[in-house]
Length: 146
Image (cartoon, rainbow, N blue to C red; front, side, top):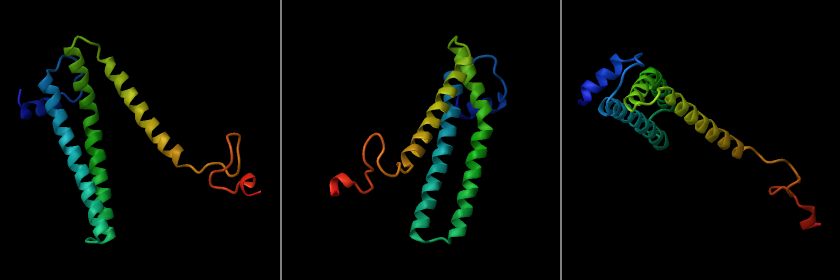
C-alpha cells in the first residue's frame, strides 16, 4: 500500500476500531503527521528567529504564533481519534487486544505530566532561610559570617 492510499484509508477509517491494519497502513499516516508536526515546529523556530532579528513588528509575529498554535492544536485534535483507531487495528493485526493502546496512551500522558511537574517544581524558589536540610543557599548564613 502506498502513501496516498494509506492516508486515505486512515481518514476513511476515522471511527473504525474493528479489523486489522497492515504496517504500511499504520506507518504512512504516522509519517504524514510527523512531517506536518515537524514543519510546524520549524515555523515556530522561524518566528522566534524573526522576532530576535527585529524584522517583523511584534504584533505580526504574535498573530502568527497564535495562528500556528491554533492550527497545530486543531490538526492534532482532528487526528487523535483516527490515530487511536489505526493503533487499535494495528494491535489487532498482531493478534493483541486494542485495549493495550489505552495503556500506552495513559503511560505517555503520565510521562508528559511528570515532565511538566518536574519543570515547574524545579523552577520554584526554595524556602526562605534555613530548613531541615540545611541553610538557605541564597541567604545569609550566620554560622559562616557570625
